[in-house]
Length: 407
Image 1 (cartoon, rainbow, N blue to C red):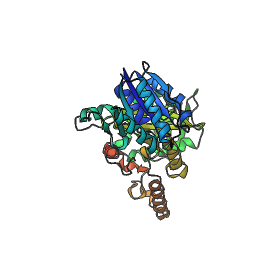
Image 2: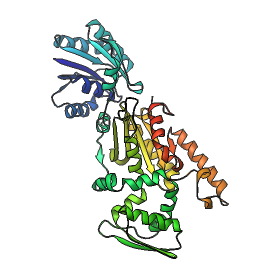
Image 3: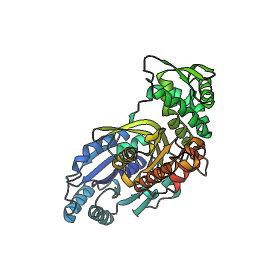
Image 4: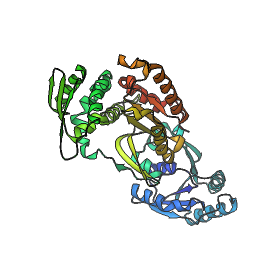
C-alpha cells in the first residue's frame, strides 16, 4: 500500500497535488494546523476528483508551533501503517511543521520530499534521487487542476457558444490582424463607429451605414466579409454599409486577440519539439470572493500559471485593468503567477497612424510612461500591438526567463 503524508499549513496545495498525481497513492493522510483545518474538505474533494481510487484521511489538527504535538501525530500514524510505502511531502506548511515531520521521517526511514515549484525541482531529503525524466513528469499540471489546487473552480467563459467559430472559421482573420498590426487601426475605425450606435443583439443582426470612413476601413470590412465576419458589405464613394450579427461583432470587437494569442501560444515548441506549455486555455472564468473574474488566456509551464489579459480598447491603460489582473493572480498563487497584459493599442512611438502625432502626442507619451510604471509596480508584462507578430518569442521568453521571477 502506498501512503502519502501531506501537510496543510495555509500555503498553496499545488506541491501536494503534483506529488499525489505523480505517485498515485492508495491513501493520502493529511496533517493540518488548526488554522488550515478548514481547508481540508476542499482538499479532500480536490484529491478525490483528481484520483477517485484514493482514500483521503485527516489526522487531528495540531498547533503549528508545538513540535511535540506534531511529532506525536507522525509517530502514531507511521506506526499504524508501518508496512506501507511512505512518502512525506513537507512543502505546504509552516517551517516548524516541516522540520518536525522531516525529523520523524528520518527517524522512521520514510521518504521525504520538498517540492520547489518555482524552479520545477523536487528536493529529495530522504529517499532515491530524482532524474531529469522524473522531474519532467511531475511538473505537469492542467489549468483546471492548478485552479482546483488553489480551491477554486475553472468555469467556461462567455464565448463558449462560439468557440468552434472562433478557433476554426475565424482564426485566419485573427492571424491576419496579429501578423499585420497596421490593419488593427483600420478595424478600429469601424468598430468605434459601431460602438457609437447600438451594437447587435443576440437575436437580431443590425445593418450599419457610415459616411466618411477612410478607404482602409472599407478594405478591412471587405476582408472580414471574406472570412464570414460581416455580411452584405457595400463600399461606395463616401459610404460604407454592412451587416453584423452578435457573434461577428463580439469577435471583431476583441475576441480575435484572445484567439490569436491562444493559438500562437499552442505553437511554441521546446528544444525536443514538444509543446512548451503543458496546457493552453482561453475563454474561462473563476469566481473569487463572490466576484466572477475572466481568464482570457491561461498557460501552464512546468506547473506554473501564466495569466494573459487581452485588451483592444483604451481601457488597456486604466488602473482598473491592471488591478483586475492582480486580483485574479493573487488568490491563484500570488507572486508564483506570471501576469501579461496584451493590447491591440500601439505605443505612441510606434503608432503607424500619423494622425496620432498631433498636439497631444507629448501627452500620450507621458501617459504611456505612467502606464508602464504602473504595470512594473504590479509585476505585469505589457505587450503592445507592434509586438504581436513576434508574440511566440515573447511568450516563450516569459515562460522560461520571466522578467519578474515567479517566486
